[in-house]
Image 1 (tube, helix red, strand yellow):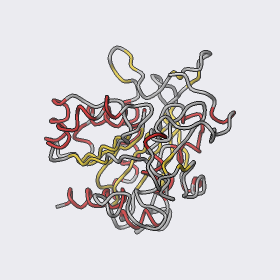
Image 2 (tube, one colour; image 1 turned 90 degrees about the horizontal axis):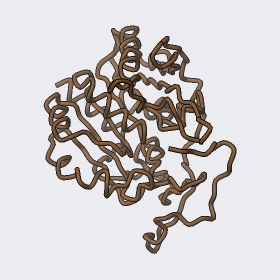
Image 3 (cartoon, helix red, strand yellow; image 1 turned 45 degrees about the vertical axis):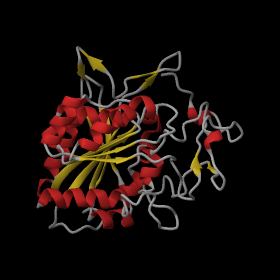
Image 4 (cartoon, helix red, strand yellow; image 1 turned 135 degrees about the vertical axis):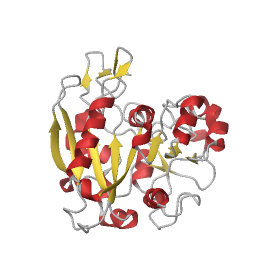
Length: 313
């Protein structure tokens, strides 16, 4: 996919989004998240994982104990996987991938504490504007990132083995695809996953295998997604999703910001409804503290906490 250099252009707030005609009275367009961005990045430490297949992988880790959590307790580990092109942002990718707010005191308290891992794919921009080296890179039918990303996860868990309970994978767009990929490759490794705005969904056979492993999955996708069409990617699978005991679905009509406005993000093309990661990072809670969905009254943090408790029973 060809992508513009987003940092070299400004947001277009004048071109009507392709879904603008579907807005009803009282609904309005909002042009950005309302939570504080790039404020908590220093809570994450940077590491490098040597890898011949992909090139050395930079990754970031938030350690809850280092930042005040009790050292005699156990915590889940959340791995957040960025979307296409986001790795070029370096440490700012912690914000782009959805992880930053989950290191805040408020989110940590709701979850009961959590480790956070943010790895970066070794993406590179080609002359035609397309991106190579993304999470979907295969060699001989094998995803080249799957094993080393699992190895990074193992390394973090080994280093904090006395304080680890339960592993999650979550990500949006290309990160949503890679979330499914890791679930397929290492099904028994995880207790929970959140694939967001993913154009890819595993086969029914694979979904049944994930259900059998008792991995809790929250599938999140906007109905007006501009890049991964809901009608094409998700609607044909909704019957299967609802039949699975381990799957929760979040398919809102609109992806919204904290101000309750309909999200528009236009840097070369419209992607506000595709970038559900901003809504997920807002914890599915509006600025006035009301939930964006009655199905998730305590947001994503409450869902994560409940999955951990469910596994502990």
